[in-house]
Length: 264
Image 1 (cartoon, rainbow, N blue to C red):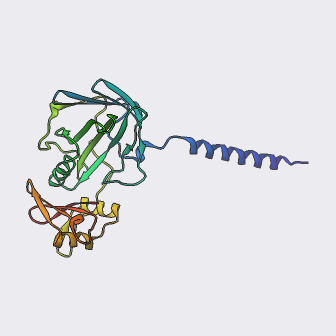
Image 2 (image 1 turned 90 degrees about the horizontal axis):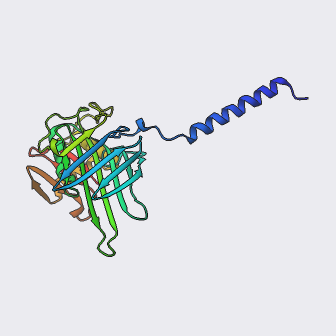
Image 3 (image 1 turned 135 degrees about the horizontal axis):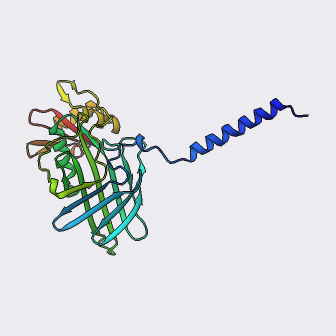
């Protein structure tokens, strides 16, 4: 005969298993990812007569409207930092559109580092940004072989020492309109402290990127001492990819030699 205590124990076990199953089936917590848009928030950017509108339906779903087209995509959270951000992304589209979508935060020690990032990222996308560091860039194109449409969209919020900038140079507040809840004024993420290594100062931004990508200081110093470089708007870019043998990193320094960023 089964005792009452045995039945109670079985009931507790079943309840615990059901609770565990329910927890495993729930959506990932958005606060574990550095998102930009809150549910209900809308960002509209206009450039050269073209408009991109992005609306957040919930923590991960976004509605993209541009050039007479509208698409709803669900983005996924990054499990680790990628190029400085642990945001959300989608590397594919659907049967009608190839899409590469990014949303996240970018963190910097100072204004100089933020402008270096905008300079580098602007090589791939035409960016617009507000004075408070909200950045949107997109590219709408077609594949030359068969004309299949492709869309790249990036939404970023920049933070300098954990706070949104106030007067980011080159900004166009008229070109970016936000409705709904604004982006967060303060970020919870903290960069590593800046350090001097072998007489060279590394910003926290650079050290964080190095840790994320498995790049060590010796590799960076080798690139700075040996790799060819070019200067753009007062910043010097050193490419380890052009060395023999190559070192897979791109290093940015300012006029005094401070390492602002290190990218793979």
